[in-house]
Structure formats: structure tokens, C-alpha cells
Length: 468
Image 1: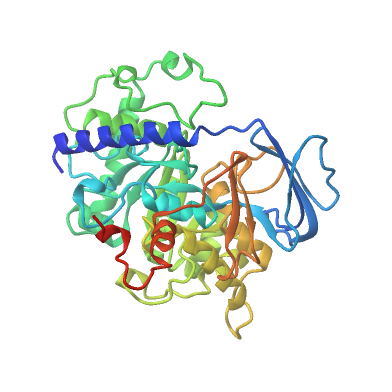
Image 2: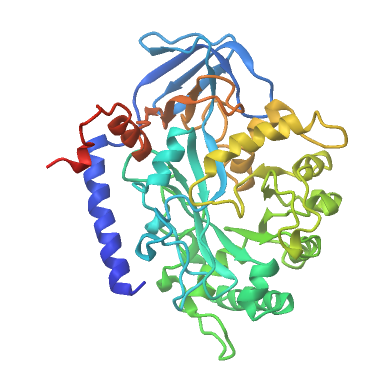
């Protein structure tokens, strides 16, 4: 895509988003809502609570459980016969970065331009992308969004977003730096895993050289309010990095600057690797650079090195049902991967890794349900119902350090709540009410509009699109 096309597209997106904001309003509800008489699942791994109550006030969860009083003046929603859970958190996705694959101008996942680690995916998130609405209608309220690699093993900085129908989707910009190792990383580095590891370490050392020149005042000045403060300061502010560099460098100044907070442990380093040998290299990287906050994505062969992963403390976001040797780096893939890693003490969450991550984040609850059923098969290792829900709500949030803000119905969390027609880990269940930050969301999608338009055709009368 040319730069002119990209600017034009983003400009149009901005106009559309602005109009959408006028139409649907903004989030941050000042309302008090009490959801009563439903089966409540907190999302922390505990069992469901029958006949419970959830109270949300000013966009935050106040209380949830069996003996919760309904505050005076609250709007009461009767959930008799329904299930009430925290919103689903997409553990790994590209939600909001594309609409349709066949139109290059509609995709902002990766860049072939001169920058890599410095890329910030947050400005490219389109809250009006149809996959956002589709996933919202199926109970996905937050998503961890990673960029894809272009010409480097560094893809850039990913974000945490919400799926609300408003103009401000970004919850945390620049939450993590994303790196590809394994087969794809080797390809980006020139055809060898050895080259990928050298590139990664060289980049961190260039960042260390640049970081030594950052004045202390640059880190502490201009404090931001807790409500708006991102996990890290914007590393793309080049004015903060005027240190001298040696002449023997591979990274652009912006890319090196973007890795300074990673090296200092102020920004998560998320690494995709599947093969056991690659996972061991990620663990070794943590020992070599002890301040890194590592998160492992993929890990199809994670169960084979589960004790080492558990000792390292590195959280894992894995595909739930990857069980085929689809690549040489996934020969030991098995549906028991997550269950076995959990049994060994690894911190695990579910993500749609290598699994249509631009649209199908809502599949996570199906996968979680399958892991429950897997526990009933001889020789297989699954998870309990409560833990399965946690794998798609609180565990992804905890993996990227925001478990205190989202992912469960514990007091103080964002008011992301879903009322389901039945057990949400059963495919027949539908999201009937979705709250994000305490605001009830529209569940209309392009698909539902098409259904309503064409489901009752009168014989002999042309559909609306064919009338003049």
C-alpha cells in the first residue's frame, strides 16, 4: 500500500469513526446496574454460583456473588435462567486491523516499510471494522491485538483494545513488543534460527547503548493521571533519545528507542515460538536479560518443556486445540497441551494463534468448552469448567499484566459483563446482553442486518437490492 493510500484510508476511517461516535455516544456509564437471579461465573477459576447478583456502578464492578444486595435506585436486569460472566478477553488477535483479506487497503496488520520495533499498532485500530462488531455480539469485550511482521523479526508494539461501539477502542497502547522466532522468525532473519537469535540480541544491545543516554528526567517528568497512563511512556518520542550512538548499528534510531522500555522491563516482550527447542531459547533469553518481562505465544510443544516453563514463570498464550503436525515446529502438538502445562504449574491462557486471528476470536469459548470435555477422555488432560472460563477471561488479562483491571467480576474491574442464554461454553449459547465499561452495547452486525433484510421474501417480489 502506498503512503498516500494509507493516509487517505486512515482519514476516511477517522471521519466514519467520528460519525459513529455521534450516533452511538461514548462509554463510561454513570449508571448503577444490578443483574439478578442469574448463574454467576466470576471468571477467576471458581465454580459458577446459582441465583447470584452482579452490581456495576459507574462503569466498574462493585460486587458479584450469592448474597449481594441490590442498591437502591439501580436498574435491575432479571437474568433468571441465564448465565452471567465477565466479557471474553481475546488472548491473541489482530482484531480491528482488517475487514476483508482481498483488499490490501483494508489491512494494517504488517508493514514492509523501513521501521519495525517502532511501529505502534494503536492508531491503525478501526473500531468500525466488521469483525469487531461480530466478536462483540458473541461476548468478546476486550482483545490483545498484535501486529504482524513485515521485513524483520520485530513486528512492533501491540495494544489492548475494547470492542465497544464508540470511537475510542484503545485501552492500553504500546502494551507489548511483538517478536517472531521459530520458522517465521528464521525466514525474516534470512533463513536461519541462528540469524534470528543474533538479530534479537543485537537489537537489545543497541537499545541498551541508546538507553544509557536517556536523562533521568525523561522518565519521570510530565506525570500522567492513573486513568490515562499507558503501561509505558511513548518510546517513539524521539526528543527523549538524543544520546550518541556508535556507528556499528543495524536498527534505525526509532526502532532502537522503541526497545529501551522492553530492555528496562517497562514493556512486555511477547515472543511467538512453537518448537520445544525455541521455547528453551526464550527461557534462556530471560536468564540472559533478567529485566525482560516475557510472554510466550503459541507453544504447541510447550507440554514437552512444561517443568522448565513453570520454573521460568513466563506466561503462555496458546492455541487450545492445535493437535496436528502442521509444521516441523509443531510435530508434538496435542489437544492436551494446555491441560498438561497447567498441571505442571505453567500460567496459561487461550488465544487464537495461527487461527484466523483477525475475525474468529469468539471461537475461544468453543475451545474452552472442548477442553472441559477433553478431561473426560482416557489419557487426555483437560481443565475444569471454572478454569476453562478463566482461560478466556482472567488468564489472558493476567498474562499481559492487566488482571487487576479486566477479565473477572471481582470488585474494581471494568464493568465488562455478558448475559448468556445458556452455559457460555456450550456452542448453543448466545450473548443476549453485553456491557462494556457498564454501557449496554448494540449486538447488530452486518450479518444480522442481511438476515433481517432477506429472511421474509415475498414470492414474485424482487429483493430490495434489485428494486429501482
